[in-house]
Amino acid sequence: MPAIPSHVPEPSRTDPSLIRNFCIIAHIDHGKSTLADRMLQLTGVVEQRQMRAQYLDRMDIERERGITIKSQAVRLPWAPTHDKTDTHILNMIDTPGHVDFTYEVSRSLAACEGTILLVDAAQGIEAQTLANLYLAMENDLTIIPVLNKIDLPAAQPEKFAEELANLVGCAPDDVLKVSAKTGLGVDVLLDKVVAEVPPPVGVKDAPARAMIFDSVYDSYRGVVTYVRVIDGQLNKRERIRMMSTGATHELLEIGTNSPEMLSADGLGVGEVGYLITGVKDVRQSKVGDTVTSQHKGATDALGGYKDPRPMVFSGLYPLDGSDYPELREALDKLQLNDAALVYEPETSAALGFGFRVGFLGLLHLDVIRERLEREFGLDLIATAPNVVYRVIMEDGTEHTVTNPSEFPEGKINEVYEPVVRATILAPTEFIGSIMELCQTRRGTLLGMDYLSEDRVEIRYTLPLAEIVFDFFDQLKSKTRGYASLDYEPTGEQTSSLVKVDILLHGDKVDAFSAITHKDAAYAYGVRLVAKLRELIPRQAFEVPIQAAIGSRVIARETIRAIRKDVLAKCYGGDISRKRKLLEKQKEGKKRMKMVGSVEVPQEAFIAVLSSDDSAGSGKGKK
Ligand SMILES: Nc1nc2c(ncn2[C@@H]2O[C@H](COP(=O)(O)OP(=O)(O)OP(=O)(O)O)[C@@H](O)[C@H]2O)c(=O)[nH]1
Image (cartoon, rainbow, N blue to C red; front, side, top):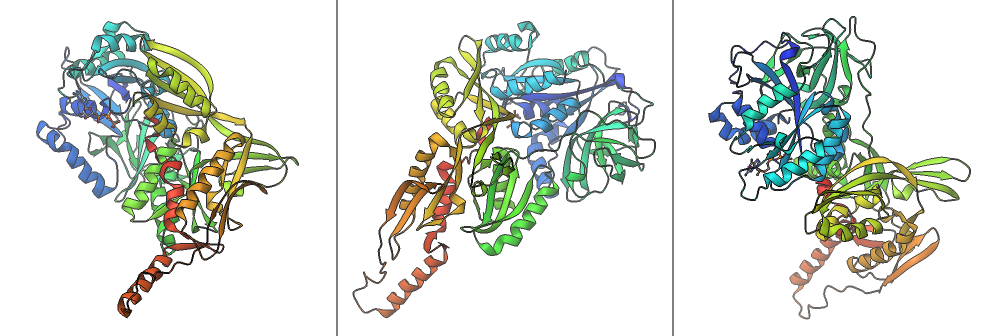
């Protein structure tokens, strides 16, 4: 059981002046989870003995309950070391670390008054350090700069303290130096949180308003919603209303996490905790929404609520067509816990029945695909990810294209594609190769800043479609792994885009259609056609493989005819061996798909659609 000291004030009765709501932001692997663990330990909410086994324990519970309890929000009692009587309540709110989930990060930040900006003392500032810092600044948070891992021999605390100080605008001496691993300096850091993060301000007697900053599905309890109360109070058993949809629910349970759930009578101004209403679908309890009381509720919702918008689409098809109902069921299940996942049925002449699925970004795509394969045992073909295009025809009609094969034919006036603002951090020696890469990906240089003598920040506008494919891998290989990348969507631009179709024996293969820039169309066509020629076995007749824009063929290869005689090698008359070979051939045929009159092995689809040509790298933005 959590060791909650008896003098810790009861939830909902905590004086807001004793509350501090904060989060930790960091680049991946800079030590956020380790620091959080140390804080749990130091504040006594997790005992020393449990701590050692905690990582595994957590995994078990997570698996059992299908819920990530990796501390969406943890309530930590802390009496500053100089004043043991005044126990404060620190609410540590976890932020999803990835740009795909920027909107959710920004909601978590909006639930805090301050943030710890954690930087690895051996690595220095990275792209996500910056991205998260900017989000924190937009939310007007008090920023506490901290260098972690000072126990490492490779740490350069002086150098990076200066870099960090320049970035946030403080003196290098104000940068705290800690080791999350050994615990060194973590108590000083908690004191600093109490001293520097402002207490929450809200109107106690106003109608209740609480902001949802996270919402997870628990197979036992239904949706668990994490909120921060801004004004008023939410009480157990009252009816509450979700302000974006107007839906009302009974508040079955309300409480705090320390880190286990601890039910309470209610939550008051500035408090952070969880709600359970028995709903089964996270879309009924959306991140960013405002919760109020049904009776005498608030009329104005808190800061803008936004529906998540999918940025990247991919077709998901079961390898074995009979798995289609299972795929639908699996997607339904995943959607219970993922308000951003959208999908609709789709049919492909080449791949059969499947779904067109929309994702927030590449990482999201990778996570979902992996979960479908691992947790639901499905074998899938995923078509190359593509972005959403807006096509305006000469007659003024507009099409939204989420699947290249639906790109309209006819007279097109303009095509719009989404663009992102990318930030790349790297040692200065790589400036040349980074710029070269960005130029070939149709990038426009926005600016460049030196963070220190040997590190530079380069900003580009890039079409999203250009980073969906292997951009991050290229960047890493051109910078020997030293560059980090972050990006955010910034709108759209018109571009000269065309659809390239692939034809097998004169028949279009919809799964291979792609939208590319006019100048890249030829290269795409040549590459795909050559690859298919390697992958498709010879058939009984000659098979031309063509790449075409409209009716204009831009590349062609031919697979010569052959009659495959599997018995050719069996000179003797061993009939049973012959039979075996014929059966084997029949087996092989089952794994072929007929595309028009051509037999294409499954492997060809997989090889062309996944492997090196498609993104496949959720690592995308580390
Ligand atoms: N030597 C040393 N290693 C540390 C310290 N803090 C964290 N680490 C190690 O750094 C690695 C990354 O730490 P995490 O806490 O998982 O980092 P994170 O930022 O939470 O990473 P993600 O959850 O993957 O974003 C782990 O191997 C930690 O053991 C530290 O103070 N000193």
